[in-house]
Length: 104
Image 1 (cartoon, one colour):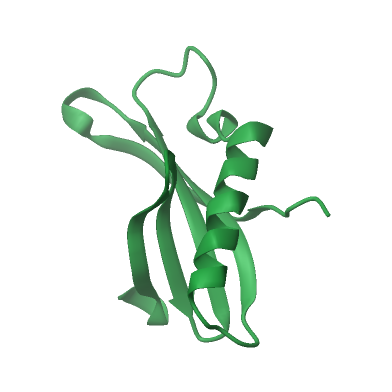
Image 2 (tube, rainbow, N blue to C red):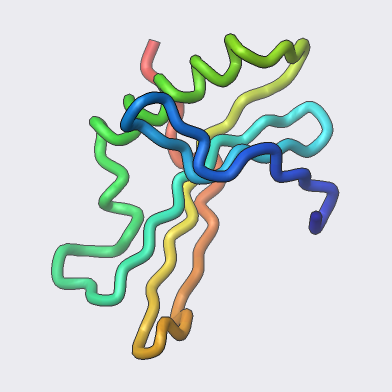
């Protein structure tokens, strides 16, 4: 993949909860939520990653980390925000790195 990234999982599920993409580059493991909107009546796509949604993603991430043996990896949570127009033409795509950090 580009820039040294490897996609490990797409659509990783834990029950009804899901993480869209899990990717790795060297010592960094990233859990990515992708949000797409065609209308912005309710705000930009990234605003749909609410506190509740973040907690769900964190729960799935914890499950993934428990099932896979990784040592000395940093973990990050990202959001990819996509605005699409007619015919699913991408009008804007923004990668928000380190979009949030889990509350301890």
